[in-house]
Image 1 (tube, rainbow, N blue to C red):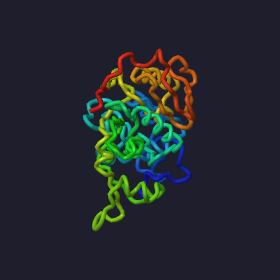
Image 2: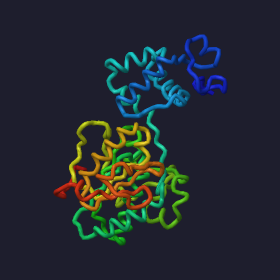
Image 3: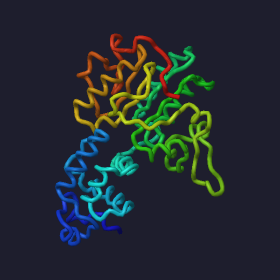
Image 4: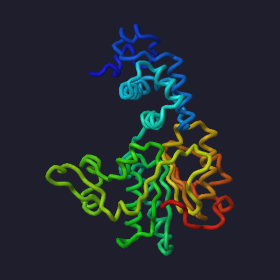
Length: 307
């Protein structure tokens, strides 16, 4: 067991100095000031609002970065990070980003998406943005739904899949998963949309090219002032990411999504999210599914910059 795995006595509280860290069986001390600096920095870089009860998680994840970079204390690491740390700032963000996902998570969304896409089949191109792609299960679930909505033919859907975490995007682009990740999908779904590995790759599956070909991955921070996308989306998935932001940031993002959507476009959010305050931009269509208000939608539907 590595020292950063907290003992019950040390878990959930700040360890102020090296002596206390040694007594608690920890590799590094994390002072209250260290934790506050981490909170300020991750909020500035990624909009994530860390609760005080996340100290254990922060220590565990960042202790690995201290070890990897050779820093001897959190203060040294944070001084370096706030200065000229090069690519380490992205590694810091990657370390503190939560990436819980699965295929067809929040399954009630996908019949609604399928019906919506089927109604758009006459369009030469259907554009979808998945804002929190993580390791790819969500954008590939959207792609499978698009193929199903196309009735077995070629789908006109194109999915822009973005995430702030560059590490998970690499996993997503590879499109390879263990058998356990698809165990609940059913044999027919796995046969239709995945390739099974053999030999050295036994126990693994890979997304079929016709599914992967609908998805383009790109790194994107939702907090940036100008997103590198253009209006013209028919659906936006932003599920279980805005819950890490404060309320003003959440409502600001929701307002920014509206003019990117074509008239009738849908916004899918996470199961615990409610944006009824954004009634000028969206109306509730179903459980955590919103339809853009006509006055708020983009005025000239076009091809967004997602490929």
